[in-house]
Length: 190
Image 1: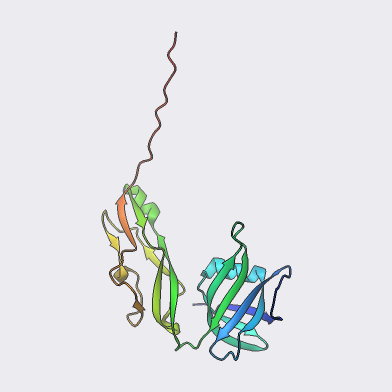
Image 2: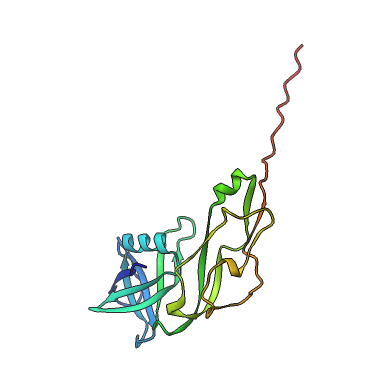
């Protein structure tokens, strides 16, 4: 796995608006007090697109490197641009609770079998040591059959991680739904 790194620049507390940067805050292990920072907007957006809103990462700040994860991403409601990011600094042995995104692949193969995936949950909340947390979970559904379900055993999580509901169903394979065909009524010829 590649090491994900993001540069942070310390800034003054209070309102912040600077073109090309997004406001953020660092807090947690080894941080005396919450530190107001700014992140370069393009780098941050690339990271969020590639690794998601709960990414584990290294933060470069003031000539030091700290390990943590993105705890919260705030966005403008309509345009969805990132306005603020909270990063929690932790040791790799620190126990945390985090939502891990689930992506499903192979749905195109299901369609050739007249099947489709019905997704119930696209993330899972996990408790455990930071070092054991995956950045994301990928589930291949291409070999699944009608009425197969995606449960905890198909997610491939480390056995030392704990989840709230071990019996949860994350998805089911169902028959491909045919879109209703609208009947065109021809006007009567006179």
